[in-house]
Length: 580
Image (cartoon, rainbow, N blue to C red; front, side, top):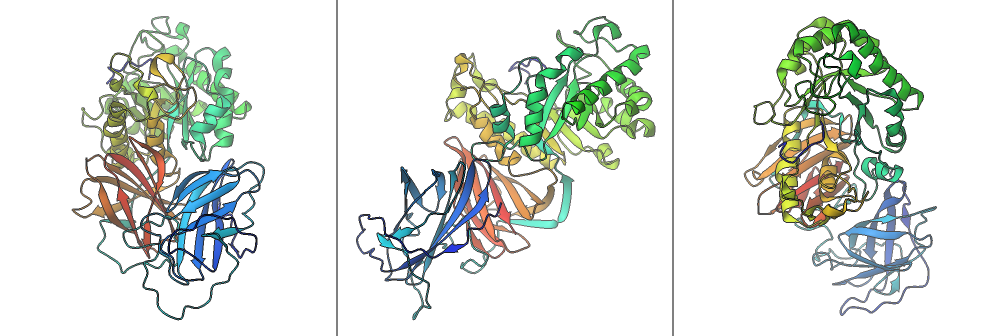
């Protein structure tokens, strides 16, 4: 929008490895002596600087009531996060200990856990494992008697990385039932803007914002401005090129705040003023020149807006249009903007008066690809809902800007405190709630204001607010629960909820052989052991949660065919990714 004020209100399969090597000596727990074991270690996904791994341990000896598994890395890998086990690391040596619910392993029984880790250069599998100090050298053999000890994946216990045929209890009544036969909008992405008037994101900052690795946020749309001065267009080239090359399917939207002053009725870049009708062709050529310049720099501008906020005329770059004027311009001049799709109209509160004229006119309508609007006042005006006319003409609706940070009060440094309650309350109850509602409204994209700012997704280093430049902030982790896991091209699908799941605000999406649910629990009570039912068997389940005290942290799950059991913490936002 503008200079806002707070008041504007891969599976890389390593496979099974049977290992023979010297054991790593550890202290044995009471009643935990094992005399044989085998280990399956598999890298489930791998990205530029990190990977996820699943470990399955089979006990070939006497039953154990607690366990410790040890191994060492040979290439500097470092564990960063774990589930279904507590992992610690000293140098190359890694120690995994059972949780309270999965310490018992019967003879020929198994237990599984998973973790994320960083790597650089190479990522070889560990050469040896030891269970309770005994080297895992065995091959599983049939059991002579049924196991009566609990498995590693009880109905109420976690197992975020189940095998294709997990051993689980009988099906139970679901709390969230996903219906993939009923489909809604296709998702174009989630994003944020570069600085419109200031400096560009650095390469590292851009990678943090658009990357899909550990502590990266997964944005898939980047918004930039079109300066009326062509000499300023180069400022954002490197950041936009990085976003396109480093991110996955990243789209760029470019928005102009004003035409050159001489083309306007007030002869000024600021305070609104209309584009003179005899300069309509010049303005169309100006927009096209920007798109072609960026194209020459290796940056595709996917969407070009005709005007940022035609209904707002502040004392900085701005330009005034009516809905009829926008329709006339797009009809007569829109085809001149090549290699990009036009958007109308980015009005402050998605005012239909600025978009209906274009949608209702076949000439204008055929020259645009998208409808845009901002969230300021949209909910209060009753327009945070499906836009029927846009749907009628198959024009995706993008929410292209919102900025809200009233939690900062009179300028405190609360934004640098990752556990600040005021920041979290605003993030969950205002920001993430409106993302949820926009998805329920069949909107195709949600784009926040600046991605780098003390109240946004990564810090800007401004001392007064206590953030570190380029470091992910709480709001960034929360937003990544959508952005990182609901990817462009996914389609929102239907679901129903039981009374137990009534406090949860849930949307579901399908794409890439996965069903992904984003769950907001804005209540003060956890919803434990919620059963998610999907139409197909689940081969892998992942659960990530952000709360006041957690940042996209892996959570336990339990899988039974097409059912997955998860526990959703109070005052949290979760993403459940189910690989089919």
